[in-house]
Length: 366
Ligand code: ZN
Image (cartoon, rainbow, N blue to C red; front, side):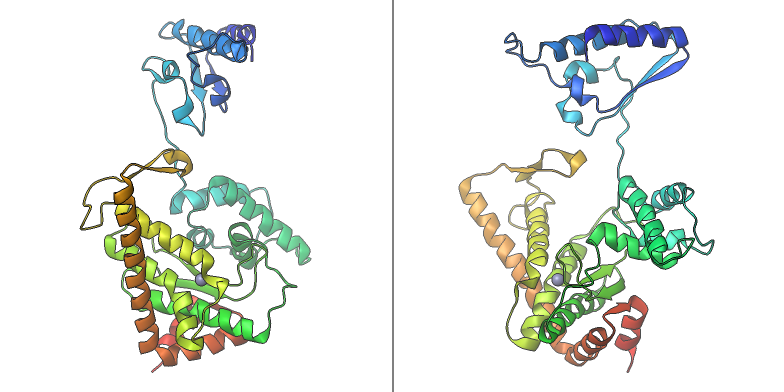
Protein backbone atom coordinates (compact mmCIF):
# COMPACT_ATOMS: atom_id res chain seq x y z
CA UNK A 1 0.00 0.00 0.00
CA UNK A 2 1.10 3.49 -0.73
CA UNK A 3 2.00 5.32 -3.94
CA UNK A 4 5.63 5.74 -2.90
CA UNK A 5 6.01 2.02 -2.28
CA UNK A 6 4.69 1.30 -5.78
CA UNK A 7 7.14 3.84 -7.24
CA UNK A 8 9.95 2.21 -5.30
CA UNK A 9 8.92 -1.29 -6.39
CA UNK A 10 9.05 -0.34 -10.06
CA UNK A 11 12.32 1.56 -9.66
CA UNK A 12 13.87 -1.62 -8.26
CA UNK A 13 12.27 -3.75 -10.96
CA UNK A 14 13.72 -1.56 -13.73
CA UNK A 15 17.15 -1.77 -12.13
CA UNK A 16 16.96 -5.55 -11.95
CA UNK A 17 15.37 -6.06 -15.38
CA UNK A 18 14.82 -8.57 -16.91
CA UNK A 19 12.48 -9.59 -14.09
CA UNK A 20 8.92 -10.43 -13.12
CA UNK A 21 6.79 -8.40 -10.73
CA UNK A 22 4.12 -10.63 -9.20
CA UNK A 23 1.18 -9.10 -7.37
CA UNK A 24 -0.92 -11.68 -5.53
CA UNK A 25 -4.54 -10.86 -4.64
CA UNK A 26 -4.44 -7.74 -6.76
CA UNK A 27 -8.07 -6.99 -5.89
CA UNK A 28 -6.77 -5.67 -2.54
CA UNK A 29 -5.49 -2.55 -4.31
CA UNK A 30 -7.10 -2.89 -7.72
CA UNK A 31 -10.77 -2.68 -6.76
CA UNK A 32 -13.11 -0.42 -8.69
CA UNK A 33 -12.60 3.17 -7.65
CA UNK A 34 -15.69 4.64 -6.09
CA UNK A 35 -17.25 7.56 -7.94
CA UNK A 36 -18.21 9.45 -4.83
CA UNK A 37 -14.76 9.51 -3.26
CA UNK A 38 -13.47 12.42 -1.29
CA UNK A 39 -14.58 11.39 2.15
CA UNK A 40 -11.08 10.19 2.77
CA UNK A 41 -11.85 6.53 3.41
CA UNK A 42 -10.11 4.85 0.51
CA UNK A 43 -7.76 7.61 -0.52
CA UNK A 44 -4.62 5.65 0.11
CA UNK A 45 -5.82 2.66 -1.85
CA UNK A 46 -6.83 4.84 -4.78
CA UNK A 47 -3.50 6.63 -4.82
CA UNK A 48 -1.78 3.26 -4.81
CA UNK A 49 -3.87 2.12 -7.74
CA UNK A 50 -3.30 5.36 -9.66
CA UNK A 51 0.43 5.02 -9.19
CA UNK A 52 0.33 1.41 -10.36
CA UNK A 53 -1.57 2.43 -13.48
CA UNK A 54 0.91 5.19 -14.19
CA UNK A 55 3.84 2.82 -13.80
CA UNK A 56 2.25 0.28 -16.12
CA UNK A 57 1.68 2.96 -18.75
CA UNK A 58 5.19 4.27 -18.41
CA UNK A 59 6.78 1.12 -19.76
CA UNK A 60 8.64 1.27 -23.00
CA UNK A 61 8.01 -1.78 -25.16
CA UNK A 62 11.02 -3.75 -23.99
CA UNK A 63 11.95 -2.55 -20.58
CA UNK A 64 12.22 -6.22 -19.55
CA UNK A 65 9.75 -6.06 -16.70
CA UNK A 66 6.82 -8.43 -16.85
CA UNK A 67 3.89 -7.85 -14.53
CA UNK A 68 1.88 -10.82 -13.33
CA UNK A 69 -1.08 -10.56 -11.00
CA UNK A 70 -3.54 -13.01 -9.52
CA UNK A 71 -7.07 -12.60 -8.21
CA UNK A 72 -10.08 -14.68 -7.29
CA UNK A 73 -12.39 -11.78 -8.01
CA UNK A 74 -11.67 -10.51 -11.52
CA UNK A 75 -15.06 -8.82 -11.74
CA UNK A 76 -14.23 -6.50 -8.86
CA UNK A 77 -11.16 -5.01 -10.55
CA UNK A 78 -11.09 -1.44 -11.74
CA UNK A 79 -11.78 -1.33 -15.50
CA UNK A 80 -8.68 0.80 -16.03
CA UNK A 81 -6.61 -2.14 -14.86
CA UNK A 82 -8.15 -4.70 -17.19
CA UNK A 83 -8.18 -2.42 -20.26
CA UNK A 84 -5.99 -3.60 -23.16
CA UNK A 85 -2.48 -2.29 -22.87
CA UNK A 86 -2.32 -2.78 -19.11
CA UNK A 87 -2.50 -6.54 -18.75
CA UNK A 88 -2.11 -8.06 -22.20
CA UNK A 89 -3.32 -11.49 -21.37
CA UNK A 90 -5.83 -13.09 -19.03
CA UNK A 91 -5.34 -16.70 -18.02
CA UNK A 92 -8.35 -18.24 -16.26
CA UNK A 93 -7.18 -20.99 -13.92
CA UNK A 94 -9.80 -23.73 -13.76
CA UNK A 95 -9.91 -26.77 -11.51
CA UNK A 96 -7.35 -29.34 -12.66
CA UNK A 97 -8.43 -32.21 -14.91
CA UNK A 98 -7.44 -35.85 -14.43
CA UNK A 99 -3.94 -35.42 -15.87
CA UNK A 100 -3.48 -32.16 -13.98
CA UNK A 101 -4.57 -33.72 -10.71
CA UNK A 102 -2.16 -36.60 -11.18
CA UNK A 103 0.70 -34.20 -11.87
CA UNK A 104 -0.18 -32.00 -8.87
CA UNK A 105 -0.34 -35.05 -6.59
CA UNK A 106 3.10 -36.13 -7.77
CA UNK A 107 4.60 -32.70 -7.16
CA UNK A 108 3.36 -32.65 -3.56
CA UNK A 109 4.23 -36.31 -3.00
CA UNK A 110 7.89 -35.47 -3.59
CA UNK A 111 7.89 -33.93 -0.14
CA UNK A 112 6.87 -37.16 1.59
CA UNK A 113 7.98 -40.80 1.57
CA UNK A 114 5.61 -43.13 -0.24
CA UNK A 115 5.35 -46.67 -1.53
CA UNK A 116 6.61 -46.73 -5.12
CA UNK A 117 3.60 -48.88 -6.05
CA UNK A 118 1.18 -46.01 -5.36
CA UNK A 119 -1.10 -45.56 -8.36
CA UNK A 120 -1.44 -41.77 -8.63
CA UNK A 121 -3.71 -42.00 -11.62
CA UNK A 122 -6.21 -43.95 -9.56
CA UNK A 123 -5.96 -41.48 -6.69
CA UNK A 124 -6.44 -38.58 -9.13
CA UNK A 125 -9.45 -40.30 -10.64
CA UNK A 126 -11.03 -40.71 -7.23
CA UNK A 127 -10.37 -37.09 -6.32
CA UNK A 128 -12.32 -35.60 -9.20
CA UNK A 129 -13.31 -32.00 -8.59
CA UNK A 130 -10.52 -31.40 -6.07
CA UNK A 131 -8.61 -28.12 -6.26
CA UNK A 132 -4.82 -27.83 -6.14
CA UNK A 133 -4.96 -26.88 -2.46
CA UNK A 134 -7.17 -29.88 -1.69
CA UNK A 135 -4.77 -32.21 -3.50
CA UNK A 136 -1.88 -30.84 -1.45
CA UNK A 137 -4.00 -31.51 1.62
CA UNK A 138 -4.68 -35.09 0.49
CA UNK A 139 -0.93 -35.79 0.23
CA UNK A 140 -0.38 -34.23 3.64
CA UNK A 141 -3.16 -36.32 5.18
CA UNK A 142 -1.73 -39.48 3.61
CA UNK A 143 1.62 -38.82 5.31
CA UNK A 144 -0.09 -38.18 8.67
CA UNK A 145 -2.14 -41.34 8.32
CA UNK A 146 1.00 -43.38 7.64
CA UNK A 147 2.69 -41.92 10.72
CA UNK A 148 -0.33 -42.74 12.87
CA UNK A 149 -0.17 -46.32 11.62
CA UNK A 150 3.52 -46.47 12.56
CA UNK A 151 4.72 -46.83 8.99
CA UNK A 152 7.62 -44.91 7.53
CA UNK A 153 5.97 -44.34 4.15
CA UNK A 154 2.49 -43.69 2.76
CA UNK A 155 0.79 -46.41 0.73
CA UNK A 156 -2.18 -46.58 -1.64
CA UNK A 157 -4.78 -46.88 1.16
CA UNK A 158 -3.33 -43.83 2.90
CA UNK A 159 -3.91 -41.78 -0.23
CA UNK A 160 -7.36 -43.19 -0.90
CA UNK A 161 -8.51 -42.75 2.67
CA UNK A 162 -7.15 -39.19 2.66
CA UNK A 163 -9.40 -38.25 -0.24
CA UNK A 164 -12.33 -39.06 1.94
CA UNK A 165 -10.82 -37.15 4.84
CA UNK A 166 -10.39 -34.03 2.74
CA UNK A 167 -13.58 -34.35 0.72
CA UNK A 168 -15.99 -36.02 3.12
CA UNK A 169 -14.58 -35.21 6.57
CA UNK A 170 -12.89 -37.47 9.07
CA UNK A 171 -14.08 -40.98 9.65
CA UNK A 172 -15.98 -40.83 12.89
CA UNK A 173 -14.87 -43.87 14.81
CA UNK A 174 -16.98 -43.24 17.89
CA UNK A 175 -20.31 -42.29 16.39
CA UNK A 176 -22.69 -44.97 17.44
CA UNK A 177 -25.61 -45.83 15.25
CA UNK A 178 -28.34 -48.08 16.50
CA UNK A 179 -28.68 -51.32 14.65
CA UNK A 180 -31.86 -50.12 12.97
CA UNK A 181 -30.15 -46.87 11.88
CA UNK A 182 -27.27 -48.79 10.41
CA UNK A 183 -29.71 -50.90 8.45
CA UNK A 184 -31.51 -47.82 7.13
CA UNK A 185 -28.22 -46.17 6.10
CA UNK A 186 -27.15 -49.38 4.31
CA UNK A 187 -30.38 -49.46 2.31
CA UNK A 188 -30.12 -45.73 1.64
CA UNK A 189 -26.62 -45.97 0.17
CA UNK A 190 -27.38 -49.10 -1.84
CA UNK A 191 -30.44 -47.25 -3.14
CA UNK A 192 -28.17 -44.58 -4.65
CA UNK A 193 -25.77 -47.13 -6.08
CA UNK A 194 -28.42 -49.42 -7.52
CA UNK A 195 -30.32 -46.61 -9.24
CA UNK A 196 -27.02 -45.36 -10.68
CA UNK A 197 -26.06 -48.82 -11.92
CA UNK A 198 -29.42 -49.55 -13.53
CA UNK A 199 -29.37 -46.41 -15.66
CA UNK A 200 -27.23 -45.73 -18.67
CA UNK A 201 -24.84 -42.76 -18.68
CA UNK A 202 -24.07 -43.05 -14.97
CA UNK A 203 -20.58 -42.96 -13.54
CA UNK A 204 -19.58 -46.37 -12.15
CA UNK A 205 -19.71 -46.88 -8.39
CA UNK A 206 -16.25 -46.89 -6.84
CA UNK A 207 -16.98 -47.35 -3.19
CA UNK A 208 -19.90 -47.47 -0.78
CA UNK A 209 -19.51 -46.97 2.94
CA UNK A 210 -21.73 -46.67 5.99
CA UNK A 211 -18.97 -45.58 8.34
CA UNK A 212 -20.05 -42.15 9.63
CA UNK A 213 -17.93 -39.09 8.85
CA UNK A 214 -17.35 -36.09 11.13
CA UNK A 215 -18.92 -33.96 8.42
CA UNK A 216 -22.21 -35.46 9.55
CA UNK A 217 -22.66 -37.81 6.61
CA UNK A 218 -23.70 -41.25 7.87
CA UNK A 219 -22.50 -42.94 4.73
CA UNK A 220 -21.83 -42.18 1.12
CA UNK A 221 -21.57 -43.64 -2.33
CA UNK A 222 -18.57 -42.60 -4.39
CA UNK A 223 -19.09 -42.57 -8.13
CA UNK A 224 -16.14 -41.96 -10.40
CA UNK A 225 -16.34 -40.75 -13.99
CA UNK A 226 -14.26 -42.49 -16.59
CA UNK A 227 -12.06 -39.86 -18.11
CA UNK A 228 -12.90 -36.19 -18.17
CA UNK A 229 -16.39 -34.91 -18.42
CA UNK A 230 -17.10 -31.36 -19.46
CA UNK A 231 -20.58 -31.55 -20.95
CA UNK A 232 -23.58 -33.23 -19.44
CA UNK A 233 -26.57 -34.19 -21.55
CA UNK A 234 -30.13 -33.69 -20.40
CA UNK A 235 -30.46 -37.46 -19.84
CA UNK A 236 -27.32 -37.53 -17.73
CA UNK A 237 -28.59 -34.77 -15.47
CA UNK A 238 -31.97 -36.50 -15.16
CA UNK A 239 -30.22 -39.76 -14.28
CA UNK A 240 -28.10 -37.93 -11.73
CA UNK A 241 -31.25 -36.54 -10.12
CA UNK A 242 -32.78 -40.04 -10.08
CA UNK A 243 -29.60 -41.37 -8.42
CA UNK A 244 -29.76 -38.63 -5.79
CA UNK A 245 -33.36 -39.55 -4.97
CA UNK A 246 -32.40 -43.25 -4.86
CA UNK A 247 -31.40 -43.15 -1.18
CA UNK A 248 -34.73 -41.83 0.02
CA UNK A 249 -36.55 -44.07 -2.47
CA UNK A 250 -34.92 -47.17 -0.93
CA UNK A 251 -36.08 -46.12 2.54
CA UNK A 252 -39.63 -45.79 1.22
CA UNK A 253 -39.61 -49.08 -0.66
CA UNK A 254 -38.16 -51.09 2.22
CA UNK A 255 -39.35 -49.42 5.40
CA UNK A 256 -42.40 -47.56 4.15
CA UNK A 257 -41.22 -44.46 5.98
CA UNK A 258 -38.62 -41.76 5.47
CA UNK A 259 -35.80 -40.26 7.54
CA UNK A 260 -33.91 -36.96 7.68
CA UNK A 261 -30.89 -38.66 6.10
CA UNK A 262 -31.68 -37.43 2.62
CA UNK A 263 -31.49 -33.67 3.23
CA UNK A 264 -28.25 -33.19 1.34
CA UNK A 265 -29.47 -35.35 -1.57
CA UNK A 266 -32.65 -33.31 -1.76
CA UNK A 267 -30.71 -30.06 -1.82
CA UNK A 268 -28.44 -31.25 -4.63
CA UNK A 269 -31.28 -32.70 -6.69
CA UNK A 270 -33.24 -29.45 -6.37
CA UNK A 271 -30.24 -27.39 -7.43
CA UNK A 272 -29.69 -29.54 -10.52
CA UNK A 273 -33.35 -29.49 -11.50
CA UNK A 274 -33.47 -25.71 -11.09
CA UNK A 275 -30.36 -25.21 -13.16
CA UNK A 276 -31.82 -27.38 -15.95
CA UNK A 277 -34.78 -25.04 -16.21
CA UNK A 278 -33.30 -21.64 -15.43
CA UNK A 279 -29.79 -21.90 -16.84
CA UNK A 280 -29.32 -24.83 -19.21
CA UNK A 281 -32.41 -24.20 -21.38
CA UNK A 282 -33.59 -27.80 -20.92
CA UNK A 283 -37.25 -27.09 -20.25
CA UNK A 284 -39.80 -27.31 -23.07
CA UNK A 285 -41.84 -24.43 -21.69
CA UNK A 286 -39.09 -21.87 -21.30
CA UNK A 287 -36.62 -23.01 -23.93
CA UNK A 288 -33.35 -21.16 -24.30
CA UNK A 289 -34.08 -18.26 -22.01
CA UNK A 290 -31.81 -17.59 -19.06
CA UNK A 291 -33.96 -17.00 -16.03
CA UNK A 292 -30.99 -16.97 -13.74
CA UNK A 293 -27.54 -15.56 -14.25
CA UNK A 294 -24.37 -16.56 -12.47
CA UNK A 295 -22.68 -13.61 -10.81
CA UNK A 296 -19.24 -14.96 -10.18
CA UNK A 297 -18.27 -17.89 -12.35
CA UNK A 298 -14.79 -18.06 -10.87
CA UNK A 299 -15.99 -18.92 -7.42
CA UNK A 300 -18.94 -20.98 -8.61
CA UNK A 301 -20.95 -18.36 -6.83
CA UNK A 302 -24.29 -16.75 -6.56
CA UNK A 303 -27.09 -16.69 -9.04
CA UNK A 304 -29.61 -13.94 -9.53
CA UNK A 305 -33.14 -14.50 -10.76
CA UNK A 306 -34.11 -12.40 -13.72
CA UNK A 307 -37.79 -13.03 -14.28
CA UNK A 308 -41.25 -12.05 -13.11
CA UNK A 309 -42.89 -13.40 -9.99
CA UNK A 310 -45.34 -15.41 -12.12
CA UNK A 311 -42.47 -17.05 -13.98
CA UNK A 312 -40.77 -17.82 -10.69
CA UNK A 313 -43.86 -19.63 -9.48
CA UNK A 314 -43.94 -21.59 -12.74
CA UNK A 315 -40.25 -22.49 -12.36
CA UNK A 316 -40.92 -23.76 -8.85
CA UNK A 317 -43.75 -25.94 -10.16
CA UNK A 318 -41.51 -27.40 -12.84
CA UNK A 319 -38.70 -28.10 -10.40
CA UNK A 320 -41.13 -30.06 -8.23
CA UNK A 321 -42.43 -31.99 -11.24
CA UNK A 322 -38.95 -32.76 -12.55
CA UNK A 323 -37.60 -34.08 -9.26
CA UNK A 324 -40.87 -35.96 -8.68
CA UNK A 325 -40.61 -37.75 -12.01
CA UNK A 326 -37.03 -38.88 -11.35
CA UNK A 327 -37.98 -39.94 -7.83
CA UNK A 328 -40.73 -42.15 -9.27
CA UNK A 329 -38.23 -43.63 -11.69
CA UNK A 330 -35.87 -44.43 -8.80
CA UNK A 331 -38.66 -46.08 -6.82
CA UNK A 332 -39.65 -48.30 -9.74
CA UNK A 333 -36.02 -49.29 -10.43
CA UNK A 334 -35.68 -50.35 -6.79
CA UNK A 335 -39.02 -52.21 -6.77
CA UNK A 336 -38.00 -54.14 -9.89
CA UNK A 337 -34.68 -55.07 -8.30
CA UNK A 338 -35.88 -55.64 -4.77
CA UNK A 339 -34.02 -58.92 -4.38
CA UNK A 340 -30.68 -57.36 -5.34
CA UNK A 341 -31.43 -54.39 -3.09
CA UNK A 342 -31.82 -56.72 -0.10
CA UNK A 343 -28.74 -58.78 -0.92
CA UNK A 344 -26.53 -55.74 -1.45
CA UNK A 345 -27.82 -53.90 1.61
CA UNK A 346 -27.19 -56.83 3.94
CA UNK A 347 -23.72 -57.32 2.44
CA UNK A 348 -22.93 -53.63 3.03
CA UNK A 349 -24.42 -53.80 6.51
CA UNK A 350 -22.07 -56.69 7.27
CA UNK A 351 -18.90 -55.23 5.73
CA UNK A 352 -19.58 -51.49 6.27
CA UNK A 353 -17.39 -50.54 3.31
CA UNK A 354 -17.50 -52.26 -0.07
CA UNK A 355 -15.76 -51.60 -3.36
CA UNK A 356 -17.35 -51.03 -6.74
CA UNK A 357 -16.14 -54.45 -7.84
CA UNK A 358 -17.80 -56.22 -4.93
CA UNK A 359 -20.96 -54.29 -5.71
CA UNK A 360 -20.92 -55.28 -9.38
CA UNK A 361 -20.15 -58.94 -8.55
CA UNK A 362 -23.26 -59.27 -6.43
CA UNK A 363 -25.31 -57.31 -8.95
CA UNK A 364 -24.25 -59.49 -11.88
CA UNK A 365 -24.64 -62.74 -9.96
CA UNK A 366 -27.52 -64.71 -11.48
ZN1 ZN B 1 -28.09 -40.07 0.25
